[in-house]
Structures are given as structure tokens and as C-alpha cells.
Length: 82
Image (cartoon, rainbow, N blue to C red):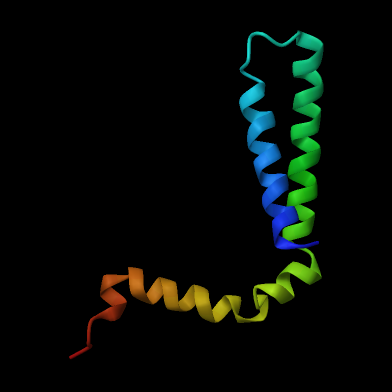
């Protein structure tokens, strides 16, 4: 799956979520939109957690990146020990 496809799915998901609050829609349509929202979430999650996307974002470097972010945001760990 290409990045623009993921982006498009996210845009559709946002539209579906906003449409649930549209009082001009029939209740049956809102119920279907809720089901579609769940399916879109499942599709996005499985895509983002899939091997192809993990390879794209260099997921194997994730632990090191998380440690770097934690070090930047943790003032005490950044202080020199005397």
C-alpha cells in the first residue's frame, strides 16, 4: 500500500467520523457509517502494523528513537551527574 492510499484512508475516516454527527442523515446511514468507521480503523491499524509499512519507517530503529525522545524530554536524565 502506498502512502497516498494511507493518507486517503485517513481522510475518508475523518469524513466518516464527522458525518456521524450530521443530523441530516438517516439513522440507518449513521449506523452503517459507524460500522465503516470500525472497518477503516481495522484496515489502517493492520496497514500501519504491517511489514511493508514497518520497513518503510525503519521500525527496527524504533527502540533507539524512543530512547532518544525519552532522553530529550526527561530533564533529570539529561543533567550531568556530579
